[in-house]
Image (cartoon, rainbow, N blue to C red):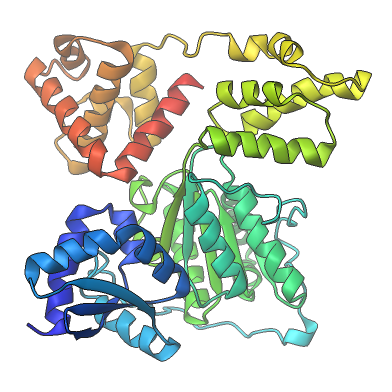
Length: 465
């Protein structure tokens, strides 16, 4: 068996053994560089992928390769040169999960590039970068280490590594911090670099305004004459077809000029409802990385970082108490610390565990979850997937309706302990076996589908917000 055939068989099996996001992130643009005397050398696209495959996936890759060829005894990794990387990329586009994605091609002409010696850091339309958002002030843990490392790599080699870069995660977990940290790092290294950072809502509003006022060419020039395009919260574009079309053309123009594109959302591209397929494929064509809720160690490290920045004198036990009890997101964690820090600002006395307990009583000792009813859950799921409650509970068997309906049934069962017959009644009187099947299916999928698991986590946050 040829090396290319062996690796194609291995990739097919790896795609079934790892999540789609991890497969696209780590195994795209890889190939077998050499095979001799039982040793297989896998060529990766960059040092970051080399390190991650070596640490995390070497045993799995070896197991799969040995299942195909018993003479293989070991696996090692190497980093491809730029020329080799481009060759591998073109070859493997037919193999990985994005095999049906068409080649990027601008359907509109590229715009004139401003000379580097006259460039400004940001466009007048962009949101100024917050200087406090840097890599140095970002606390890295197991929940965000991949996203952090990817952003670091992009900041060091914009337009070359992970383009586009798509970061997703729940509210208050640090997406905006990382995106702006990239912009700040690039500008610090090259003040002539034009970084456009903008919120999706602002992009959409300016696009509509430019159409109304007949200034669309100025709008296009503003967003395409840049070196780096960073756009936050792209889930806002759901259902906005004209704005999606403009983003698609802007994406193509920038990508074809090797300009770096970074995006964020509260969910992966495939989970954004009413997003045009061609745009979704573009957003997923680079690296996708999620940020999860921080674990205890990361939460404690974040609190220690904030304590040192503010110069607060607080007991270690008090910090530990906050870290153990505020688990939802970084924003709430900082809010809790700010609340107890107010005591220090007033009295300049050390904050003790007892004081922290007393001040945060309303935050920590309140019931962890409010009581929710079926209508609230149905409304939250409908809103998340951009469908109406009537569509969700109706009789449609369209794929884009069936999956959200199964998710809603699963959440109803888990969060309200509702009986299967009662769940069926909420969905046009369906039989209880339909509700049982939906819950069992989602239960099984969650274990192997990280995107679905993340969706349900987001939904729970919305329901209990």
